[in-house]
Length: 79
Image (cartoon, rainbow, N blue to C red; front, side, top):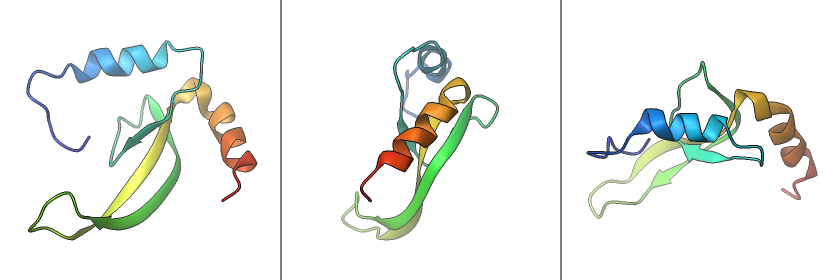
């Protein structure tokens, strides 16, 4: 979550992600550990602001029931 967007229903979004049958990959700095697994992470400089140049750790998450599928996607990656 980059920012706590006013009015965004995070619980509804998490529920939606968990009910998907197709792979769901979420790029975020953090997610609820009890519902999602981090399958990859990397550090980079955040340049979203003209005045900030912060080092951040971006993570890729999948719903827990899709972890095996997410790991398979990483294994097939060319990177």
